[in-house]
View (spheres, one colour):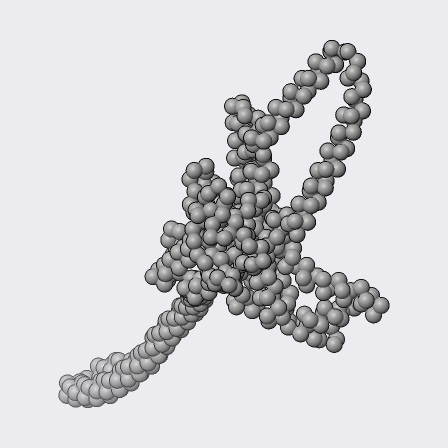
Length: 364
Length: 164
């Protein structure tokens, strides 16, 4: 997929350069005339172009953004402040190999027969291309995920303890702050959408909400990893919701797929594929929604900060910082909204699969 | 495009970490939290129910009290009325008895008076007879010589005797 896209991009670039260079050649005969003014203008244009090219070489905003939203084998907070993370590789011939990613800090980015490729994301490839290597490294995203897991476990286990210690008393401090959110998820998201059997799904959905929320917010911190904007993470969450939805789905749900109520038989030819595609579309939309929202937010913020480096002006920086501050607030809101929506839609999907239909109502 | 290519290693870690978090939180966090919340809700609901019940009981008690007061008032009124009636009756009876007694006394007094009168009259009669006899004796003794005076005397005596 990656190489295909590269191919596409490069073809597009070649096409673009051809397109733009044709008029340039067409201008050439005009330049033969000894028109000093035109020549001067052209020279100035060349100079500007040259400067632009130079500055682009110095700071490539697209590269910077991709570097920030992509996964990495080390956790870079800023230039020079970098935490090397463990690289864990599995290959059939060598077994499990564990070493620090700092080993790649050499001229060739090479260590122990592996090569660290810097594309728009990092990749570890074996120098011997016939070998198949599986990369289970603790990347920046995995490290951030572990951090969020520790935060979640620490917060909620301590809150759970305070519920046991404060039995029959009003909640205190952080407990009451979290209780509002827990109650909101339970009473306004899970209970009305999942239905009477909601309690079985409550632990999964609460964890889902807080996992996404904490990771969304961690991703907004400077130097934070863009975990919930990573397609692998949102895919795993969506697949888990898909599995949870279909684990206890009742007969009515499956029956609805192949024989929806009140649909004329000829229409079934269209409806059945639509329904079956819909089943897989639901987790797919969950995956893309969270991924796209978080990644888009990061890209917007990074683009704004990138503008500062493009303009390289002290006049622009405060204005852009204000914009970025505003967008950061919006992103905090989005962090909550996306966690809420993912949980809400998951509850709705689960609810639709386990919903009890009274048979008397439909007469079948 | 790498953005849209899920990294298998990350999927693996994501599955492991997320499922671990789900299980740890379900066991050590959500269970006590949900239980605590439910207990508290039940407690509050129980307290509210109790208050409602107590209120109903209070209303019941109040109406009971009012009923009791009304009843007590009625009983008191009845007792008072009964007492008054009894008193009235007693007074009336006493009056009647007294009247009867008085009548009896008067009657007996009249009887006594009449008896006494009769006794007195008979006594007077006896006295008068004795007296007239004595007078007659004396007259006879003294006036037998004088015929005229005798007759005058007899006439006089006779008139005086008739007066009785």
